[in-house]
Length: 203
Ligand code: PRP
Image 1 (cartoon, protein in one colour):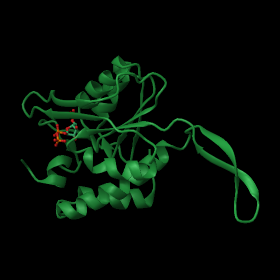
Image 2 (image 1 turned 120 degrees about the horizontal axis):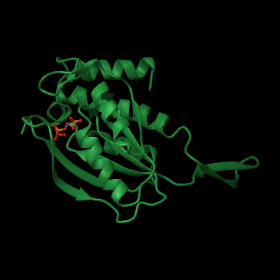
Image 3 (image 1 turned 90 degrees about the vertical axis):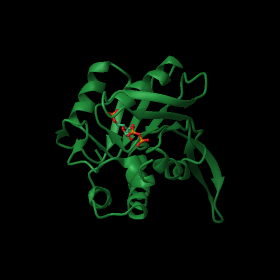
């Protein structure tokens, strides 16, 4: 959990139905920085000797930057910010649209490296609702050998967390909020509506 006043403030902007798409995207960008910062807290580093203008000292850089995988559309709003924080990261893409009636994810795009063994992967999606989209994405990753997956989500529903737990998939979740529940239409309550529509408009 990213439990910080600045994260709460950005999430509040995203939740507020009065926020327009410009405000929503800006808040998601800033919240993403905080989520990625926390998700990388225990990332391994390698040391190297460097010179400052004054003296020699020990520097650090990431030993194994994660593959970033935004889930289209909504995850695109997190991709650039995550990439700025981890410029060495490679990026893959998964496109999924949740069927509004069945709530099942319908895949329409996939661009991932063939071999993910030994590589940490960060899946970027603002929302985890039933967990179907995230579980589908993680299966794509584990089929390629990934064993270290982090779901980076602005907010999640308890139902989605439970589903991931029961799936046995190798995933940890970093989020700014575990909301109350899903409603009958599969929307997170209180949630923020549809993160794709809020960013890009309904299409
Ligand atoms: C939303 C959201 C997740 C998914 C969550 O995307 O961004 O990807 O639904 O729901 P789930 O946990 O029940 O699978 P959506 O399918 O609406 O597509 P979009 O990003 O294009 O708006």
